[in-house]
Image 1: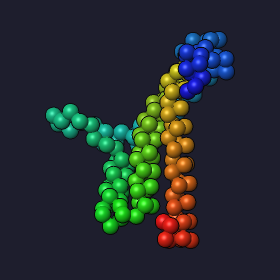
Image 2 (image 1 turned 120 degrees about the vertical axis):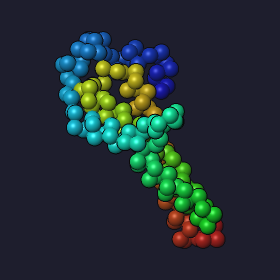
Image 3 (image 1 turned 30 degrees about the vertical axis):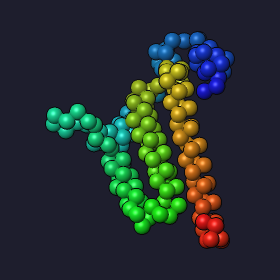
Image 4 (image 1 turned 45 degrees about the horizontal axis):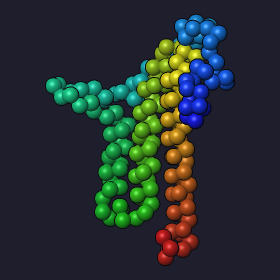
Length: 158
């Protein structure tokens, strides 16, 4: 994201130069549509994400419902007292965000047969967000490992 701020736009970054063709030309030249993968990803991400009746709120996806039910168990007082469950709740929230973004956006781009230069700014920003979520997930997992090691070796410090 620093390069985006430094250069002002993705198109002006030297390593991400897409000026040789228009967005449509890039897709026609190098794009390959993946309808089965695209529909699978979208269905995975949007299965229950529709409004029911006159309600204006959208409902979470099936996977998000499963995650939320697991997280609700972790919030029970007997579990929430333990530090490992607090870490796992944080990991679950980060993972829920990443799953939602990955499934729907990947599906739409696969259906279109989009390549990097079809939507360079969008791809750069979403890629940065997903990379941040992945790094956050990795750090949280390392924290969980450290927590478990301390819990097993020195329970008094935990």
